[in-house]
Amino acid sequence: MQESSESDTVAYTVEDGIAWVKYNRPEKRNAQSPKLNRRMREVIDALEFRDDVGVLVLTGEGDAFCAGMDLKEYFRETEAQGLVGTRRAQRDAYGWWERLRWYQKPTIAMVNGWCFGGAYGPLFSCDLAFAADEAQFGLSEINWGILPGGGAAKVAAELLPFRKAMYHAMMGENVDGRTAAEWGLVNESHPLAMLKDRVTEVAKVLLGKNPVALKATKDAVRRVREMTYDNAMDYLIRAQEAANFFDNQGRKEGIRQFIDEKSYKPGLGAYDKDRAGSTTSQS
Ligand code: COA
Image (cartoon, rainbow, N blue to C red):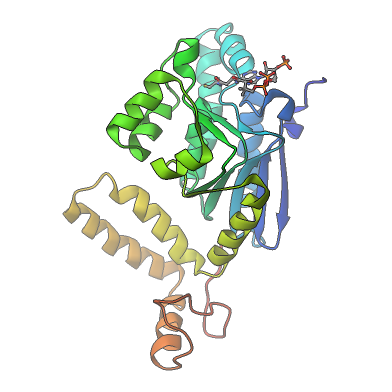
């Protein structure tokens, strides 16, 4: 099969506020090559501040989410160029994962199939993750003789209890989507045929929330993990005040619709952000 051009390694569409971004090397099980990593960075950059994008979903074409790093193009061919080749390839990959970790819009990984090693970076970058029951997750690095680098060991240690992380990393055995959900690698697992519907449902809920509050919330959850309680309290005060700078009407409107208008209950759903008085710009 003909090797895909750089621009074809990623496919995307924007529908009803949701950007569906797909790894698009199904013939290589969506392995992350330098070309794909460069293209992914361009695509997510271009989508980040578009007014018609409120949520980004990352998924894979074909029967793989992503079979990790491309052993030929990412490892063998770049190592042949010496240190500069390796470092350049790492930058291309880690760069877009970091970008996605702190993305302006909420992000969801929709794990439709194989998910190995190097795919754990972007999996963790996404705020939420939903898997197909049929998906297979594995830290396969140990099976071909390296440690779970590229953040993969960190992702396992962040998301899994110690014993499970250690077993997962050392044994090189795969788990299916259901087990991944039980373990906390993903939020939920559903039969593949129902996966997109569930992800769409979740994305629509997110589209109904105040986007400034969402960005502040997702950053806060990631940041406070590494802080003491007091540092977290301080960070959250500053983050709320900074969010008010970008959205000083949304919060007031949320209070008004509950206290004065009694048109919704925050404990049961979100205020109507599209009503007059609310200025909750997405960018
Ligand atoms: N790097 C480079 N090429 C890869 C790849 C990877 N990570 N994963 C799959 N491919 C290639 C195969 O070499 C094959 O190429 P070819 O058609 O030119 O021979 C093609 O994709 C299809 O792979 P194949 O192994 O035939 O598909 P499968 O459906 O039988 O098996 C996997 C799927 C994912 C189980 C298997 O491809 C695999 O084990 N991949 C490696 C997973 C891994 O360890 N990734 C690295 C983590 S850092």
